[in-house]
Image (cartoon, rainbow, N blue to C red):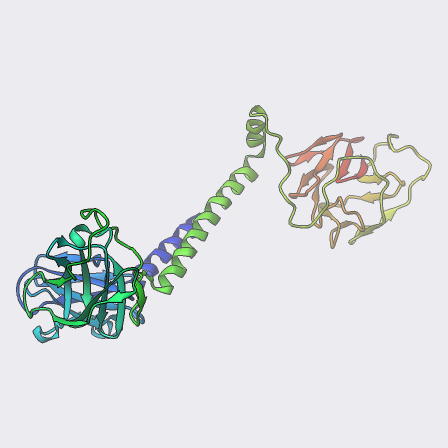
Length: 402
């Protein structure tokens, strides 16, 4: 668990370095706004950070290769811009006064002699971008545009279901001032057909053929996204491992609690690939012994017969084959074990372990799928065998003799 914790802390540290931090210094004292984006939506107010002083330490998770940094001077209503990638080369941005060329916002209102006119489409050419916007749901037949590339706007109106259009007029936003408004005169014969005064719904999609994107999009650094995913996977994996570790070391308590709750606990999957089976008596398959010499036994003798007590602990299979248990450990499994039971799918690759110390023999299960049983009872901890005990590995049964 300590290793997992250290790993996660390391990931958090790397993610923190994936963000971009730089210093902004404005050309004059006073408050200003700053934001970062990889696209421009002229119909939505930018989500910015406000600074009360001319200097600001700013951090963003946007992708430097595709993002632009904008600084708004509220005193002039103008905006400066610079590539985030260029700023991160020095981590310091100090735009000059003449760099504030973009227009932060301009409000366009459509009126005629009868008052506000909302039964029209407003057509605005912003540089190489042309947008058409219906004013039916706009308050006082007004619409506000943000972050314009230059102060010159070409504006016209279309009406009668876009079948008619007024002449295009060039309007220039004044050089200075915190807010700007342009009034457009509509033909007097145009009658409003909907009540004016409904609050505009931000995010209405304009009809546009734009080189600048109209839909705002936030793009995090790919490195930050990658490490966020790794942190999530690490947390889930750590929790899962903690649950598994607790279950493995407290199997009896967990299964007892589950049983009280009416839940039948099942054995965890065996990574060795043994097939789950119901415990049963089954004739012994072919056995390969690693370093253990099988001793022939009377094939006709009953399995349950008691062998005279000797100083030779052994396992006797249902076919009479006996396996002598030498001092030390003997592994039991389907492959490469001291006692190898080949071709038996109910036995795991490493199923159990027999340990002889003097005249005492202990059997323990090694996390098998189908369990190890002594006298029909599945064991959960090392168990000392007594002469005559029935020992079962998966579906294969032996009798223990001394």
